[in-house]
Amino acid sequence: MVRCMSPRRRSKKNEKLPPYVYLKKGRYVIVSYDPDTRKQKERRLCAGNASLSEVWSAYESLHQHFNTFKWLSDLYQKSQEFSDKANSTRKAYRSHARTICRTQLKDGRRLGELPLQAWTQPVVKRYIDKRHKNGASVSGNREKAYISLVFSWAIERGKGNLTSNPAKGVRRNKERSRTRYVTDQEYGDMLELARRYAYVPPIMELAYLLRARLAEVLDITRHDLLDEGIYLHRRKGSRDAITSWSTRLRAAVVAAKTTITNPFDPHILQSKDGARLRESTAQTAWGRIMREQWPGERFTIHDLKAKGITDTTGDKQKAGGHIDPKMTAIYDRKPLDVDPTR
Image 1 (cartoon, rainbow, N blue to C red):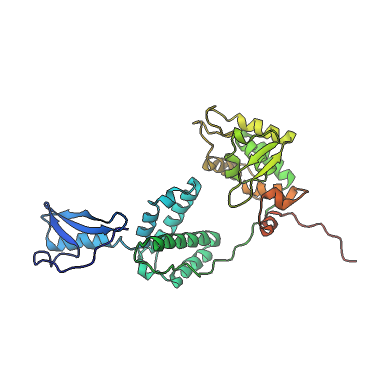
Image 2: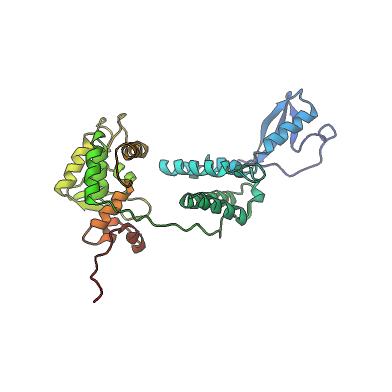
């Protein structure tokens, strides 16, 4: 954060100007101190021939964006910590930030314009309650986590003169676990419809057979094709796994390799530009099929991971790479077969 220095007595020629504002080299500048570099920094405020009222107007316009959540969020998104995140994570964080900052308050302001000192636990709770009321409970929880992340990041680095995180201790909205189970008939029907896109059928097969997320499927490279099977690098804290070869799994890999346009890129699923196929490309194609051709209840690519775990006859927790058996229970979606009461 770039912050103002400790105030000191000003000369008579500057005493009517806003704090830390000076006339230098024919322009008005605001002088601040950057604790990271330990240097002063000048920022142009307005032209040197501006009237005093115009100088104050420029100062107030500039400062209405400082020390707000939008300002802090933008600062975080320029940080190295943000840059180190996966591309999909950065994309999700930007989306969360836009939704939060655009939320309308009762006084007409946007939530992103609310001063940092006005952020309290009740403010955060009202926000996620509103998201729940609008049918976006899960999104509200993700956005609440982003708010907490930004404030924690700022506190650790002395940004915004913050001493507490308003999102800490705020209870999340209750989330309902997804229960959609894709039947064998539905899977086969979708596989046929998906053939209009060369990359969708192998994605389906690999997601199902490896019990994998879309991103994990798209991450597979030729280096992961081992003699004993496919090495899957799992995300979200799950354990990596090697899935043994089967005739069906080998066929899925062969189908995936038909998308390769750049032999120098190791990914087995590639876009037309020869790079790793993007999640957005696969999701767009999937959504188009669902909207235009699918006649029944819709399902997602991620539901195929759940189908794979559900259909596993052996150790489902091991197959899914889950450390916590509670996660396996969420993905095991087929109703139990039980005998009637005697």
